[in-house]
Amino acid sequence: MLLPLVFLAFFGILGAQSRLLQVQNNTFNSFFDLSRAQIKRHNLSEDLANNVEVALNFERTNWATGSVASDRFFKAPTFNASVPPGTLLSVEEETDTSNFTLPPNLALSRILYVSANLNGSIIPTSAYILWPWQAKSFKDSKVNVSGVPVVGWGHGTSGLFGECGPSHIRNLWYQFSAPYILALQGYAVVAPDYAGLGVNKTASGEPILHQYLASPAHANDMFYAIEAARTAFPELCKAFVTMGHSQGGGAAWAAAQRQVHTPVEGYLGTVAGSPVTDIVDTIRVSPVGYSILAARFAQGMKSVFPSFEPKDWLTEEGLKRFRLYQSLSGCNSVELQLFDSSFLFKSNWHESWYMQKYRDLTATGGRPISGPMLVLQGMSDVGVNPHIVETWYRKTCSMYPDSQIQYAAFTGVTHVPVLNAGQQIWLKWIEDRFMGVEAEAGCHYQLHKPLRAVDSYQTELAYYQQIALEDYTVA
Image (tube, rainbow, N blue to C red; front, side, top):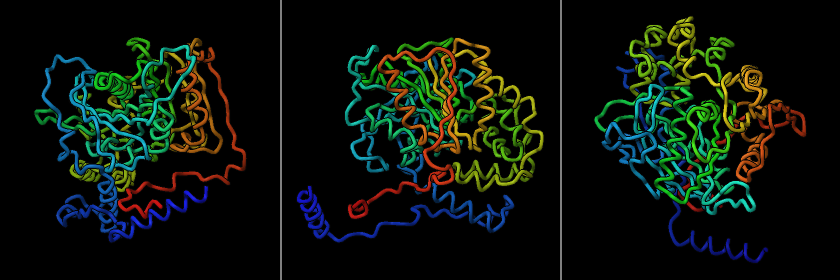
């Protein structure tokens, strides 16, 4: 084995010596500065202005193709208002993977298609398809797995604006937490950006507002993305599983609820990681900690309730920052800097009629589901309260005892890392669905514990993938 490695290294050196190496950039590729007028108008301290600039330049550096405003892929075509959801609008069959931080031997496509929001309005939406090198094989499966098996992936919160769509971000937002792993295992990953992310304007220039945590709408995005992807790529299998995390975990749970009244052929089940269930209960647990949600909900609430105004929830100072937030089209990193204080929000915002009604329209849990569901939940999750998720799991099972729900809880595990801790479990669960293995009847709870002491494990994601432009940087 040594000799081939020596030869590879030797030829690598020869290749490197044939041209002058360039220094790998370790700084941001974006150089945005707030103007003095912006800083004064929005009442920002010098420190806060600096933090917003750093966060925004970090986000923009990790755009794959520049702003969505200049990427022709995200320009919605004109289509007839009578076109049904699931209609394919356009296809980018071979997306340039050099703009992304993908593992070797994965390919990428992007599509635009028609989806439906919480109000039932049809809207153009973007999605990506992540392709494996070879399709996973399911020999002797009881399911008709003809073609490339599909997992519909619902991402967690990435932001509220067009720039925040995962198909526009170099690492597709969740990288090795789920989509890369699924594709490397042989699944085609069909992943919507969610309406309002990626494509953020209609063909006529009307803004498309992202309806944050509108789980039924996000479930629509998932189902219709799969339908449109199959139109674009007939080699995709009819059989599919849905999966999501956090915001996408709520979408995955909502997919199981949707399947009761709007069944889709080929659906095999869903995996809901750290799922958002009852948003009002979640806020009540920590109204100060979750106050940032007021800004997230305020962005799209007017598209659901035309009478809503952000001033109903935000203080005067909060409104100033909200307007800056909108003008910058910042994503999570910028949002966490701007909305860092509870004084930006009115104390009773989550008790308003709008929030209560929105909860009624979007809640997951306590409703019937179709097909098997796997729930993954970290017991040390501060993003999605584990007690609330377990409560709604138990309520659902009590109200609908025929539900097939496997609940996997993980000791000492936090929000996104539950996908790492539970990777063996969810990969086997998905494989079983494609093999036609019958899921257990009823509801089953299992608490998983680590091999070693909880505090000996790495807790959070401690790296961010950076694009490599020179061969020596990946030696």
